[in-house]
Image (cartoon, rainbow over all chains, first blue to last red; front, side, top):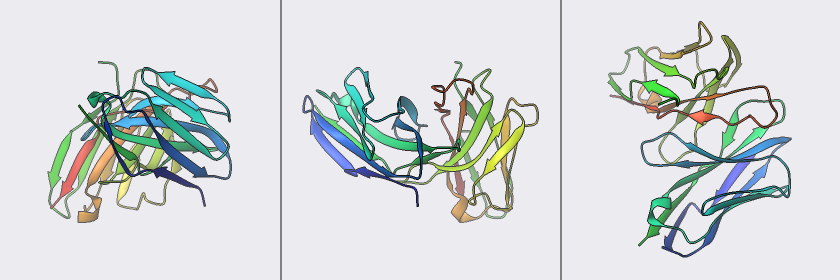
Length: 110
Length: 116
């Protein structure tokens, strides 16, 4: 069965304390892996798409990487405004739907 | 604003009533998706359209749920005979098909449904 697991469920960081979020997946065929940010009461905001193992993408303090079994979202020197839930999703070969994990709730304290 | 819009943003209804939500995708996006999200969970896929054709439906989409995209632009999602278990955030997303690297789905703000 296709599955996406995110860890940790919640993460509390001090401002400037770098860390990584994990997204592991077990799927029959991966078309793409997506990262979204979601603030409370709002829709997910697109961050990155990764298509093949070894691919990396960066945006400001965020960097996403992909292997054959998992993806990492690295947050460098986070700020309080980075506090949000980060969602990982996979798109399977031959399908358009996204299969989401349950997310990592990140809280960055000043 | 040229993003995905949804209306209403909040809906409170009594069990057994029918509700309808609207989604306006990003202009020129030919794919439109509906997802449902409950507290503490990631969004779950319901259905998607390419232009006006409904191409994929989840088993979550029971007979009480129906979605349309009559002219290939906006879409509506109707829930008949609502149940308390239907309480959730209903999210709409759109994407533009054509290039391999254009699979990104952009989400709207969602419609929060509360069934009393």
